[in-house]
View 1 (tube, rainbow, N blue to C red):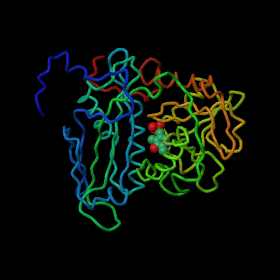
View 2 (cartoon, helix red, strand yellow):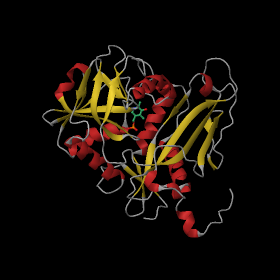
View 3 (cartoon, rainbow, N blue to C red):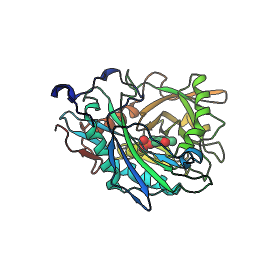
View 4 (tube, rainbow, N blue to C red):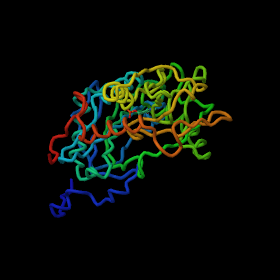
Length: 355
Ligand SMILES: *Cc1c(COP(=O)(O)O)cnc(C)c1O
């Protein structure tokens, strides 16, 4: 590691325009890397090198043997640093690893790697009040010499981080979605695993939706194409017209979003709504007065309207978020930045923060 000769003050914050951060790659100082061989993960190290040198036959490159996670670190008003439900990301990564026959990572190893990366790049953590956060990208890839279709002889687990801005610069702005004839996953495929293959399948439909000025695609259930599954790379939710019920789709080909499960809990326990994971038929959209997409990156994106065939269904409004969507957003984001009381176990502090 090169010695940082900048004055103490300058080391505290990277030279970044915090108020104009988007969701783009920015190279940060250090990333975590652990190597699996002969049945075990090594101790893991932090490295400055943001390049990975891989065997040409690596299964990650040919057969899609890889999975990833996404979570954020938040700077609080008191200077401390929050991770939001990292144990849930660790558990989901184990489930993705099992589905793709990759070695699992314990909660302890996963959370420790995330903390190390945040601590080592703390000067890239957007200040409280800017709406930004430090996005963490853990991933596991199959590597090593190979040519046949089988699980890899070796694996890498890495976590890197990128400072990102608020998803909505001008506030909570609704966006429009369109249904697609394409599927991102198969009924008993890898839809519930956070794997690159699902994303590769979504690139073309997403590109076509954007060409038509939609934010992204609403995916329907791959078996019958009658029920809503996902909104782009986010989960879908809707609120019934009487504003009493919060509903999200239930299906084995949906990626189980941690944000979605957090909203189900908040809708029930903080907003007093009835909650349900059930079927949302694309033909029944007029039962709902609000809808949204939710995920770590998207936080909560209100959905203005959905184009399905020749019909365009508008929910609350194409320009303003609905009242339930707004209250859920305020609860969730308030908890993430430490401004609102978190349910037991939702916040893990990164030691070494200023607070
Ligand atoms: C990661 C992801 C989500 C969101 O999950 P969170 O845990 O809320 O970030 C939703 N849908 C898909 C397809 C995803 O890959």
